[in-house]
Length: 81
Image (cartoon, rainbow, N blue to C red; front, side, top):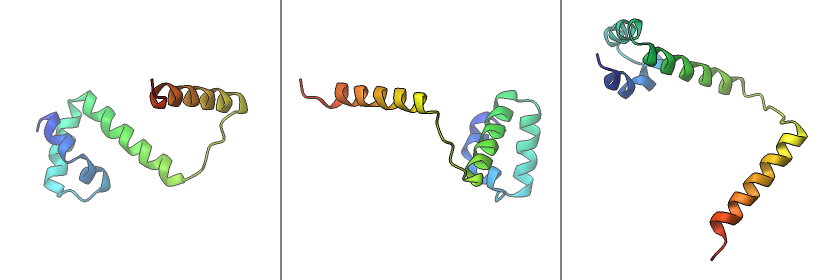
């Protein structure tokens, strides 16, 4: 299995809906491919974070700085010249 093959079926693998024989190929590939291990691990962590569904309150100073930067970017990209 090549990295490209793994990426094509990544969603099914992470969801647990992929054929068990293909899962074995995934495991073999990932045993020797650190980049694919990292991708799969990050996908799993992201899913776990979203499943928790807990909103995170940004610190006020950071939130204001972010909003100012977003407003500036909006003006730069949406103001007619």
